[in-house]
Image 1 (cartoon, rainbow, N blue to C red):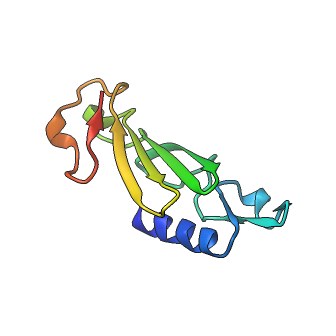
Image 2 (cartoon, rainbow, N blue to C red; image 1 turned 180 degrees about the horizontal axis):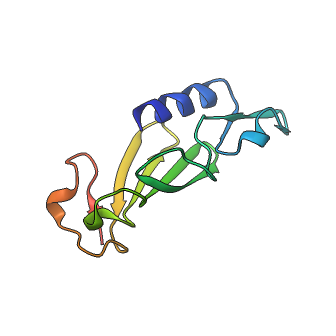
Length: 115
């Protein structure tokens, strides 16, 4: 996700709007242009991520990645939530409410689990 965050930072720094929908690339809303970040919400091209969503709430951004497909049974349906604040800080949290066999030890130190 670091490369995704860097891409989003660049898009925002250029005054544009990040999107997960390839066909929206270049669309203009007001005086801002949408830029595709390289991850397709309908086809994430990942053996772990089942679905993606991105919410733009100027100037913040939230991206959610749902784990499934080839993810270990214990983490299936875990949602990684990366939020960018208006000051440009990124925060991570895990929504583990859908995970069938979640253990707190699965969470990275920098991304705490929320029930």
